Length: 337
Image (cartoon, rainbow, N blue to C red; front, top):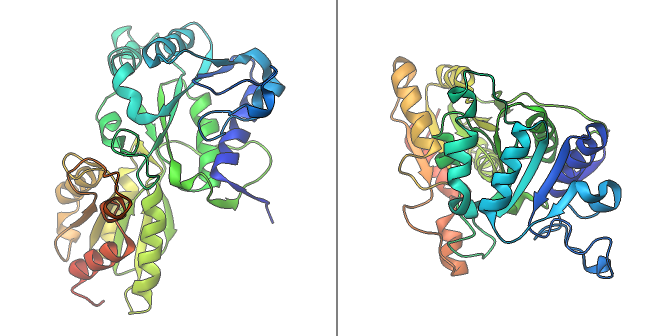
């Protein structure tokens, strides 16, 4: 039986393994070293939540603390990727992408297309996403749809430590730019993870619960909320299938259509705001390609179309809950099988 580690430890382990195996892998970010190797080493952060703690002792200056300028170090990482390195740049919160979005969507995402397929940009941009951390509107957004909209960017958002490790290793080895979204409220979530190196292909969704009455399609933290809902519904005789997308671009359309054709009903669950979300994208794909399989209207469970509140009470209401998912499944199924 594999040992259990947290999502945060899985990220650290993936970075450690890839830096040990490949000298071209480097890490850049604000406070990812945080005093390691200096008199203040005991206070070394390893990033705002300690994800890279201890890596400087093993890999030295291949981890670089950067100025508080995302445009500078993300641009440097993208340039280094074009010159033979495999940089991993950490945005402290992925919300800060606004400062360096041009480098990401106008440069890195387009190099391969603009240079006839000859340019490679093997860069990973890591960052925290999601609400529930009492970090207010500028540090709590689920911005996955914005990145998914851009051709040339690959977008990953894992839900478990096992997936996190395998997907991050694969992302580092990938020759295209990858936006790696880490839900801050999953950092402490533990699961079984092998010690060695392994990869999970990008673009392959995973059925995390079998069912025959309704399909829930989701990703990230919402996988766990959906599993909670599925357990509640099972007691009422409704068996729900839960599909974890794992990667949002490339998107596993085949698995999406297969589960809907199996159950005939669909609930899309997405922590992002509802307009132009992953939920609306999946809903439109199913409506276009599997409409004949549907036995009822598609349901969506998302955050409201508002900024994330700072008030703890309002923030808890903002995040989609298991109870909301249960009600959506009941609407989709008519309350029974």
